[in-house]
Amino acid sequence: MRRSTAAAVGTLTGAALILGVRLSVQPAAAPVEAAPAAQEVTEEPAPADAPSKKPADKPSDKKKKTAEPEEDEGGLKSGTYKGKAAQNPYGTVQVTIKVSGGKISSANATYPKAGYSGTINPDAVSKLNQATLKAQSADVDTVSGATLTSGSYKTSLQAALDAAGA
Image 1: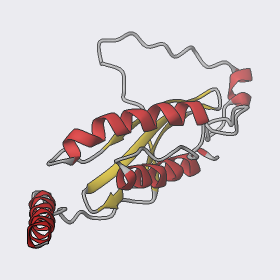
Image 2: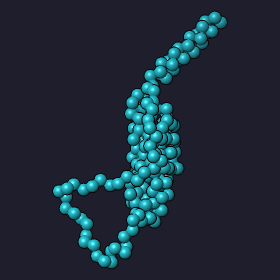
Image 3: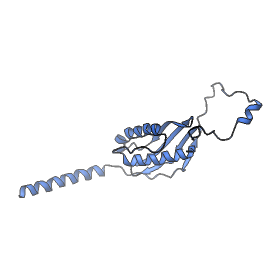
Image 4: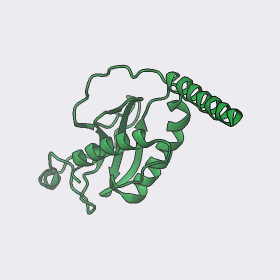
């Protein structure tokens, strides 16, 4: 009876030590200033040596031009949109989407790469990017093992979609 009690206590103590060491390895999140809720990102300018593709203005073309991008059939305005930086205890996640033809054509995110997050986040964010393209909304499934990153991703993605006019 004493041996089984000692074995159980030893096992629990060992598990607690392993868990304690594992949790203490995580780096503390550095404080970061809050970014604006959502902002539209402008396209990069063409190189100076590239030929201009802008056609000459015609009087009839001036009537068709508007100050805002046109809303496409999907309800989203074409362009590149960056969501707000969403924080979690391990760092900050920020999603950037490109919209063309009223649909999300690409989704990319910046995410924490230090410590244990560096091993989990690349695969998780890749899955979230693919799910975003498939769902065409912020209604994507949480990636197992990356719950906090998934939540931050969804928050930032929704801000980008709001900026795009969803």
